[in-house]
Image 1 (cartoon, one colour):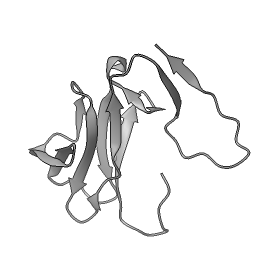
Image 2: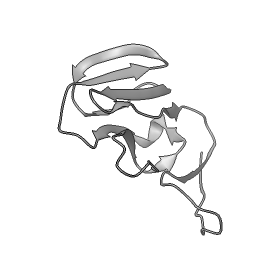
Image 3: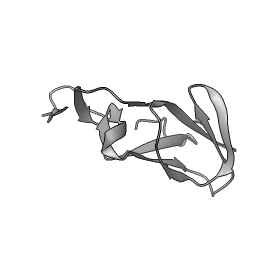
Length: 106
């Protein structure tokens, strides 16, 4: 993920590292920030979902997820789908002219 130099950010990491994430891949989300550990608040589909829960969990429902960490704010959102056919790209940032491996799952 890209950020401004010196900026404090909250990131939502996806494992396995493919986007979009698919429910049947046994997706794990990890909330990570550049500051010391603090209470993690989770959001599912824009609604407050968990307060002060672990920084990591296994997803059991499709939806759009975000996490919040004090001092670094709200993470970008990650969608977890339950579609029967998905074309995925690596979750890391890509630049023009990069070679990209696509992953088709059904």
